[in-house]
Length: 184
Image (cartoon, rainbow, N blue to C red; front, side, top):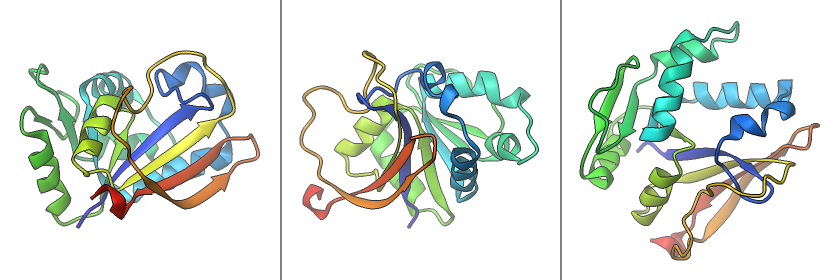
C-alpha cells in the first residue's frame, strides 16, 4: 500500500501560508538535495485547489539541471476541488467528491508513495479520516507572525510518532512524524 506524505514548509510559529515570502532566504544545497530526493521517491502528487493553481501557474515554464521541474511536470497529479472546472497542467485528474474514498483508492493502487505539498485544508480533512501516513515538516528559523496553519483551530487531538530528523547548516530542520496507532 502506498503512503500519503504531507510535506510542509512551516515557520517556527507554525505558519505554512505563502512560504515563498519567507523561506527563500534559507535555500541551500542541502535542503535542495533533500527536496529533490523527496520528489523522486514518489510517483504522484495530491494537491488542494489553491496549491494546485499556484503550482500550475509556475511549474510548466520552469527548468533546472537536476530534473526537479521535469519531474513535477510529468508526475500524475490529483487535485481536490469542488469548484475547479478544468485542470490543464499535464497529467492532472480532478477529484470532485467523496474525497476520502477516492484518496483511499489511490493509496491502494500499486506504485510509490504520494506527496502532498501545502494544501492545508486537504491535509486537515484527510487527517480526520486517518489517511495521512507521514507529516514531513521542514521548519524554517523565522517567525512570520500570522497566516494559515496546517491544522484548523479546534481540531481533535492527533497523536504523532517522531521518525527521522535532519538539520541543515542554515538552521532549517526536518522532522518526519507518523500517525500513531492511538489515532486509529
